[in-house]
Length: 531
Image (cartoon, rainbow, N blue to C red; front, side, top):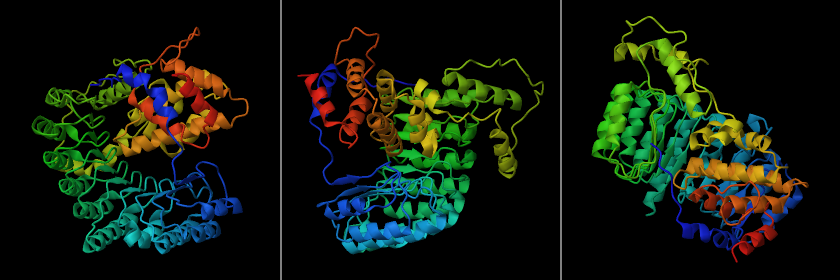
């Protein structure tokens, strides 16, 4: 179920004015995506930046000595609030990362900084890396933390336990001072947390109670860990986004989660895709949908071993949800294993806009297939899941071309940590109109209320546009003209057609013009287009 988001005509009319009035973020120093090693100019810039509130070091390569030098420059930066430090150890040995993190953390503590955002995603530091930030997380510097992003860090069970203990200490000590930790966003996908790591974190979440977004996809969590997380979510009444994609609920975990969701009134996005919720779990979720979740916007139960009848039950249960925009029930199963696999592939490929496969090929004559009991399913979980991950049955990981042809938030996230590189390679920046088209397609999946999608979109936008504007032969004015035509702000005799304007276009343009790669004269062009 998809309903387009309409932007009123007056919003379109004010688009250029809104963008033209934006300014470069005050207090932010960015070296994002520059592939730099330490140089004196960088350190001097940090030292001389008065009122530094945000430091972006993503996409660089910081060694131990470099971290120590940067740390020295940070020791007097008490105003620092946001550390955007994802993917900043490119090409470094894993052993180099923990001491580098310790140096940086100690500097923040010494400065008396009060962090709001700490992003260390895509740094493969493992459990030792979590130890490297343990002191920082326990300190007063993190008593004010609102967003913690540790996606794709390889923490493992041990790292998950260390992280949970540190957050628990942070909450207890901040509470004792009268201002308890109010963590709102927690992102830790692709970390191999498994049941023990997830359970430890669930205990911390239950204590914290302020979470609005939890993203923990692809962590090898089974029903025990899911059940623990379900209990924890009940203690976070402001929860808006819950993404546990590609973990293993089975009906036990799904039923526990369905019960927990009955108590939550602010949930807008639920992603339980590839979670093996099974038909019984889907039915339990249907009951919750009928009774609660009044402002739900998105529900993903795709590829969860759900039968057609259970899927129909889910669909009927959301008929009264007037705010629902997306219901994803791809991968409905039939009663024979082989055909089940064929239909999963066919449905997925149909969504990609590619030709259907012939369902009649390789029909399975085994009509005596029966569902095994839950106890047997638990024992055979690993082998069954392995069977589902084989190429004939599993959804293909989308490539950049597929995403740009049929954009969706899930496809963008599936591109993984290398999405920026993949999109840079795919978009022909020598063609200004194609670059503008790519910008609009990427920004169309922007979601203000989903931190993971929002970050992925902005990262992708920055990657494509920074490459474009840094390419000497890039026709910047032609790009701007194409963009304005496609947004309906200019008329053109060319074949370019206006697109349906969605809020993400405005949000991403406002972001882009604040970046250092965006030429100031192009902001003037935007303003003139509407003067």
